Length: 186
Image 1: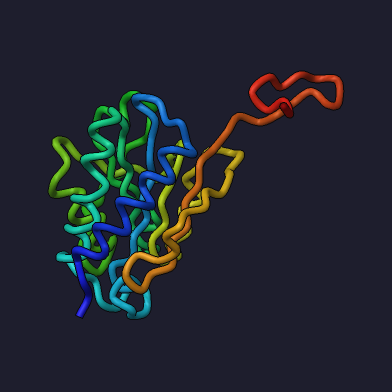
Image 2: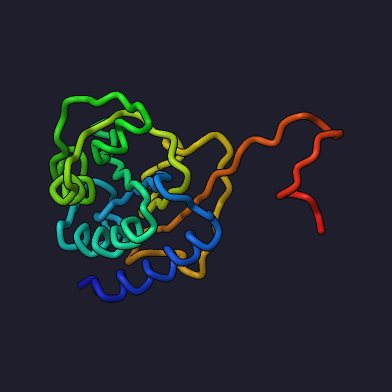
């Protein structure tokens, strides 16, 4: 049996590590891909759990709201990894809406939970998020901005699922004579 309180506690630590590294600004996008099956120790897409989805969503979402971010919940491959976002996010970032509603076995429990708990959810196919959390190797990389930087955490797993996190940064351009003040060695 999976311990939901342990999942919440570990996720709190991981989120703190990500937020410390990412320096997110209001209205930035945090993409989360989550296989509740993997959290339970099962093969991705085989044992979706609304209880696990709820525990994860209810741990992440208050941090998103507190920091005035947008959450993008990535669906599974059966929906081509489409994303659930708030309409405000889609409009602000000029994201094209698609017609589909996530289901437990076509989208996954986390996206279903997000869709049912967002104020005004819409579905989009593509996004360029500023940071991401991947629980269970759902491959969120396609939804991150161009230059991705891994974020290391003391937490390596959520339940039985492998955890990876990332932030993004602007491209460094201009060659050897260019100046990059925030990346200058001290």
